[in-house]
Length: 84
View (cartoon, rainbow, N blue to C red):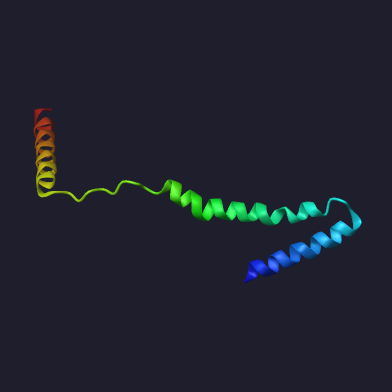
């Protein structure tokens, strides 16, 4: 609802400026410029930046493999600190 009032105010201002100058209609260009900006920022950019591929759930085998690698890394680090 507030956008309607904004358009009304811009139109009134453009009529006043247009009565003194031939370039008052440039003020009216602010409405489609803002509408384009709002469309790009609120609709298109989130759609472009959204991740297309969903991350698949981790299987039991993958989880066990990661735990094994973590244990091996911890063990290697333990033995590397004992050698010093």
